[in-house]
Image (tube, rainbow, N blue to C red; front, side, top):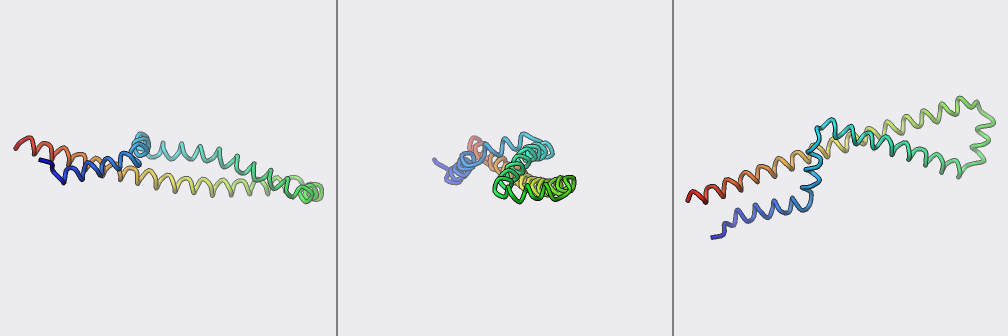
Amino acid sequence: MINEQRVRLMHKMAVYEKNGGDADERINAYFRGDYISSQMLRSFITATAAFLLLGLIFGFYDFENLMLAVYNTNLTSLIFRVGLAYLFFLAAYELATYLIYSYRYQHARERLAQYYLELRRLSAAYRREEEL
């Protein structure tokens, strides 16, 4: 006889496996600190590339005013301002990365804990059936 509760549980587990179980398993393969630090390293590289790209776009868009600023101001103060802008941009980007990937790691762990709990329930249901 088909046990409807067990079928519902298997369906729920299959939907989880299909929609996000693999990603959660990959996340769970790391320790929390290792996962977050690897993502922060990746975001450091992408933030630097994005800042350089934005700088190039701004430089090409407003080239005349940029050249006037270079010739009329102290070059060290210009470099200092660009460096300060880069540090603020990088800090904001890294903070967002930390918050996002901390959230993702925590919720992946919670979803996996729920999945393993349901797996134990399913196993217990099969054992109860075998005993009868």
